[in-house]
Length: 440
Image (tube, rainbow, N blue to C red; front, side, top):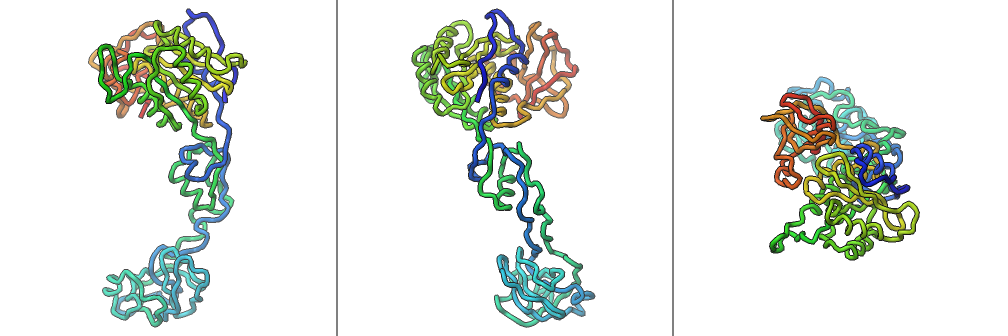
């Protein structure tokens, strides 16, 4: 699941965003493949190429309710001079024994039924009298065919080209074709294809299980009464939803008080169901020692390679970060800041790529583009920090939303992009081209 613990250095070192992300992705490894039933595999990543064992459709079949006929027998047919054909039987979907269609004959055929031997095309029932001998208008109104087993004749009022209204064998995919490539995320259409070619199970990398936990004695659950100095816990909800959006099976743990023993015990209890753990809060000055003490004592601390390192990053928001692995299984853990915007931006930059790596995907990052900055005034940014500003993006233009404060949740709710201001820029003028991370 994970390799050695992150490299360490002195506490005053300022890490770049790229260095921190590089260490995370070097630590996290894709989950081992498993065989799953099709519906259980939804959202998982395919491990192997899937080859089509049988052509789709597996036989020539009709795309219409109508009559299977020979082309020559309906050539020149018109309302004034219809072709009159003997009806020799019915062909239904799923039928194994098929009637033979000879010269001057027709077989009633249902949508999806195999084209019977001797037949070359299908005439829709609307082009006939429906075998009822009442003319073309009555035939067009009679959407259902004549009763099963009925015999007699059918009047055909229009000619049909060869293989008209016939779905050819293998016209969808042919036996031996590659149906799906390894690395494909299995959604409803892919699962439909697997079922259509007869695959009941498939080998995939499972969706990673992510446990999200907020820390802070000031946090209260929604619907509870707020007392003086308390705030509602939004981070755990936001990050759990974000983890699910990234493709994980995410579990939310209620806010844990700033108590090292309680936090340690809670994390140890959650390790059994975690491929990745995410905490938010307690990584900056203040609760720093409590969280550090708790994380350093989780699980088997004597296990080689375990340990969490706390860092300062050259970014805004999200300067304080922690990551490493904990417990006997070296479960990866990312410790994010507690401010709502800081935690969410940190998730997008660091946790989401980790989840996508666990899934076995090659492209683990949000898409990026360049856009023209639309703003009333220049954007300012602290020198030496890479700043990520919430924004809205549309048609090559991007506009900042809200201020730079890390607590502004309302502005975050309206953003679908992040403007990236590089470390060497202290201001960006309106009309300038900027890098944009697309969140939608």
